[in-house]
Image (cartoon, one colour):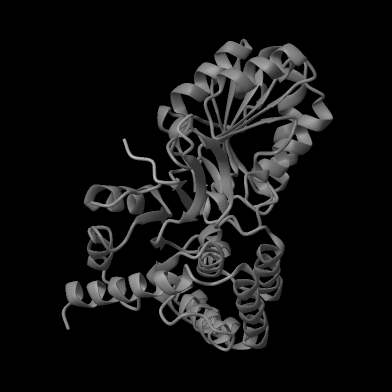
Length: 417
């Protein structure tokens, strides 16, 4: 069977599965999800062994420390996947929810109801936990899912998908509701995103190269999870101890993820006090600082920043630093160089808080908090499918509701037009 026929057969199986999924009750889905969680727990040693194969291959391939961290599965991260499943179990199933209801003068009763999207293709890189998160959220919303992970995590993804499939099947998971593309051939992605009439939505999760490859070839709708060039702006009215804690957390807590800070903007009035202390703290954490002229005048050890640094998503312990003269200049910088993902202001000035919140056009805008909270779990959505930087259908962390669409159900008593 050639690649086109193989992907077509997989899509056809997913369409059949989606029809079976639409008939499952919320209680039945939760029972299946619990079985998936139990199977993951029982197979954790096999999953870790598969992950070690990927980690070793990654080291030999020269993956960065940040990329290896994204790839790693240990007991804590497996526990987190299991908890993510159980968090989704207790969340309300949006399928069938009546969004709104009204009656027309002619007596027609119109109800707007949430329904599954159908078949969703998830194309992703590096992080094997995406295999679990995506499967669980798609299943809870009665969507069939086709997973195409990166070659660097192929053994880990296969082990996780097998656990979900086997555990779920024990309690009635429809066949082929969760499918993993086995081939690492990149043409498989092109085939999937051109399955008009079979696959309803593609969600790419990964670097810019992957997302461009998906959108370039796609003939089906795509929700993009573009790069996270996230900013923290320390205002002249900031609590500097708070600002330092937020800066350290946003950059260092997990630098290889899309909601980590990549550029720090500091008001000139407090830069002389704040930047030397910030530099001392972050350099001790292994961060390389790249600053503009004004920042380097205060911290000479900084590397000179180039124009490219303001656009960069490092996903590593590297931070671009710029001194600005005003709140307006900070907002203009974010508007010019940002990716509309997550941006924060640290300030005690309520007028500045309001201006920043209104004028910064990002999926998540923070006041006095770290950008690291842009996450479905942290938002109380349970495990997320990803973070959308699009504006249509879904924006920001995508949880259960964002994996549904709606239809209108109209009840009449013989009305004709």
